[in-house]
Image (tube, rainbow, N blue to C red; front, top):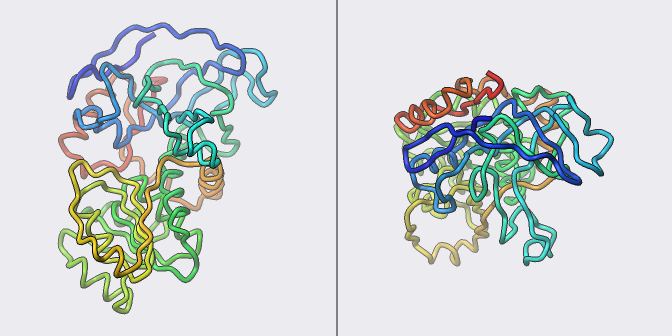
Length: 340
């Protein structure tokens, strides 16, 4: 069977690989759809420090069970559609011992530290599979990136009295917007693309700021009665947005970083103490986040079809990565139909 490898920055090729038989507690999936995400784009660009080449990308996936190993749940039978939780956890590190395996020190994510799902079949352990009973195979790959954003909103302890500013309206940012809105927060979405701001409103934002043509500080002050947002979630990964979160936060506010800054960030560190800020990282997502997002999508409470920029057949996956690299602002989500 074929798999798409990124063999070096901006270089892809299809190669033939074998898919092993599933062992105890495993199943083999026929891969149906794979969502391309920012980490895949950064791998393509050579900007993902966690990746070594060659690497099969893809960690947002849905698939159909083809074959079973032993000791598999009765729910998991051939023909059932599943989505995958793409992370590992060691069970021994400090994060795992605190029952926060999403932040496992030794995590290996599909398509990042280990080969991913842009291939025709993959073997996965059954504890990492979720049956999306009322969600199609096409939409199931949206769950993981939305869950990452939902987790960031939970890290920010968003409550009904909070005004929440979300920087970046890609799928992770939209997940944060949906999660914050579901928790009762009043959400301000910030981006430089009108199309993404429109999606943000559909996902639950009550106000938007186009930071490319509006003065960010003045608009945030206007929208918060001069106090600043209570919670700020950074889902872009730029030094200037990292800095803006601290600068714009209300006194005693909470800052949550889910994006990775690609360059060192300099801060006016007195604001950490003067404002008594809670500054937090947010990594991956928990089973509770996956369950919450799946329920949210099954209730049609999210513009799922609208966030899919385009769907391409498997043979055009490399071309789609190149086009995304050339025009990143034009894409919210690319789906690869591996069955085509």
